[in-house]
Length: 133
Image (cartoon, rainbow, N blue to C red; front, side, top):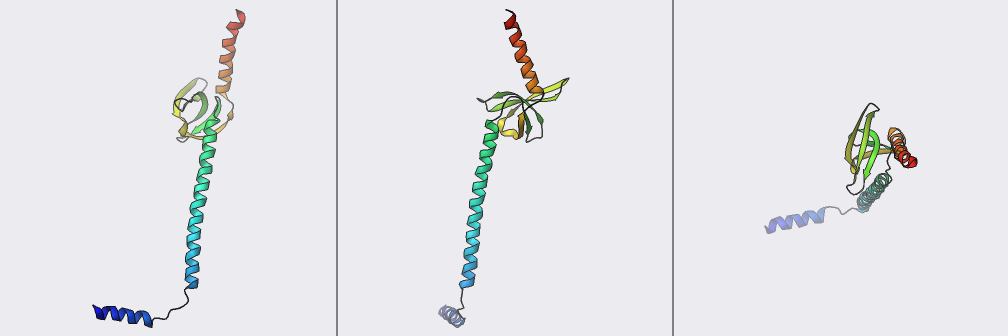
């Protein structure tokens, strides 16, 4: 055992100890680059989360929505207590209403289309009888 340790010590002494500065600099640059990438990912992830939260918070009845499943339609109803919304899809003669979690929203567009028109018509019909009396 002692012969093995002596041979290892002799080998360590006989190898030239060159300048390790370039290898150290490369190692430091790689470490700093990795840390920079981690910080950049964290900051960009938080920015995307904030944008998504703002998109969901600004949701209004009549907004055009596309879900992560690819279902497109108009917001017909919003339930903030349950964190859900009802999506109106289909054509005038064949409409469907589906309830989704707000987390299923992929894209939104400003209010327009049939849901807004339907809501305005409903409000007008509700006001008409009140005006007659």
